[in-house]
Length: 489
Picture: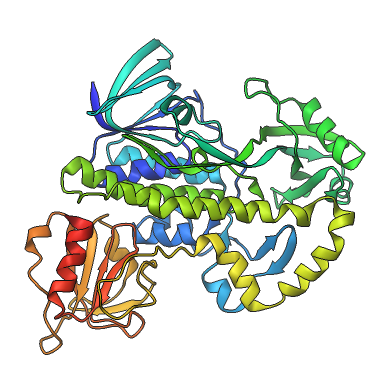
């Protein structure tokens, strides 16, 4: 059997990629080594920029609604600041557990025809000029699968990365932490010990508003290797880890769920080797202090999805697949460095106190707070210009503006719900006319829209991932056609 694309790993990156490929009607298989999928997870938040993309695809209502609570605080190295003012409109976090987001993405992928196989572990990989062969161990033994492209979304220590020969730069030694959803005898007993200690950090979060004794306990220790992945997490490990950091072990009435995490902070030197790609933590594992691991992983997938679909469909222009590495590796590097930059602020607390005080003063500045919040999330790709005037929105995500069209006033984002490219142009005579784009009708939607002051251009070309590829006058036909050919063949 041969499939155009096989995705290894059924987490957020793999499932979002599966949804994008399914939307493009590319036959896709997801291989997930776990036999059962958890109903708890480490991640608790859905970043506003993921929420914006879900709106673009018409999926927002599945994930959140008006009553979904938000987390209105940001931190850098555990120096906290409320997100308010203009920043609160664009950089909030929704309290949606990651396991639930993954469940909804998995349901959507299956709706779109993607096959998701549980209990399927990749134990071998070989590639040639025409495709990739995987050896997969499953419930019924081992077998071989063939694909044109394989994407490793299998997290830190990726089996795909190792088998395909990806090289990594190690940016920092290993870290180790545990997470446990527990019931304590007295919530104050856990809460008063939360904070930074000379040997690590201990955090507590409420998980059940109806029962303040049901909390999430979290630790992180730097320069410590985690136990081997095959070693089960135990209650003893949870209690002893917390005691090692804080000096006291908590009294646990019950443990609902527990896990461990940790690995060296690494960055793949390239995100593509032949027909094999990496996305998410498989390409850039880093400490969770960043708070943007899922955000970065999902946008890796969104960037790669339409490009793989173009290659499978046969219309990808030369070099399109290489732009995935060009665009996403710098973002992965920023995510890693943002996480590592916070470590000196976190531990040991006594030595970091003066630095934390200065940083707390800096974060009172709206400009500094916005910079730190948007350092990874607000991505603008450095697209080359076409000789026309430079535009501040080139390479940025299409802003959520209202457009006047023949069908009335509509929000811009959902015009990308098809997963195709988009051209916005004048809807009335006398404002210039767009060139004939019928040759790209199978990959590009054209929407008549009156010029928007927020966009600052008569005509706009938007890639399927929402990034603006060109802006200019509607009658600049040669320039617009050049941009269309550059991105859409």
